[in-house]
Amino acid sequence: MLFSMLGLSCKKGPGDGGTSTIKGKVYAMDYNGSGQLQGEFYSPEERVYLIYGDGDFYGMDTRTSFDGSYEFPFLLKGSYTVFAYSNCDTCASGTMAVKITTDITKNNSTVELPDLVIRK
Image (cartoon, rainbow, N blue to C red; front, side, top):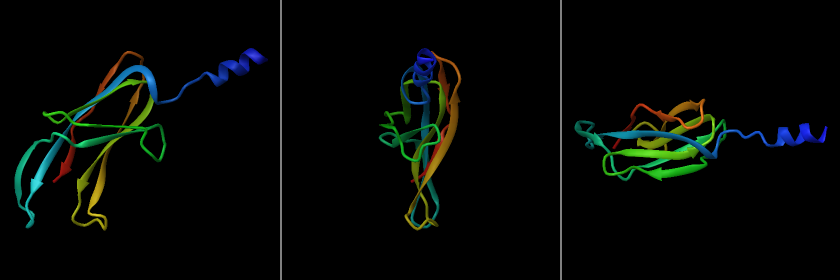
């Protein structure tokens, strides 16, 4: 009985400490004050967040590199939500989260996400 209880307590859910990676890029659409598109580009120095499982708060964050890429290494199998903040003219706060949810199903794997498209 003791051994079966120990086995149950060792089961890990999503989080850090694993061998898998989630990566992607942040793509920005830059609008001027009158709503006209001024440019589009992969955005450097954007903060990107990672939520483990169905949590309400992020467990890890990073910034994008010069080419808009980000990476969350050393993850366990499980469900994750990646998000970045985007400007939002119709939101009370002026920003909104742009999210992508994905699953890591195998150890030693890399999950490449579609672009997180934000508004600047």
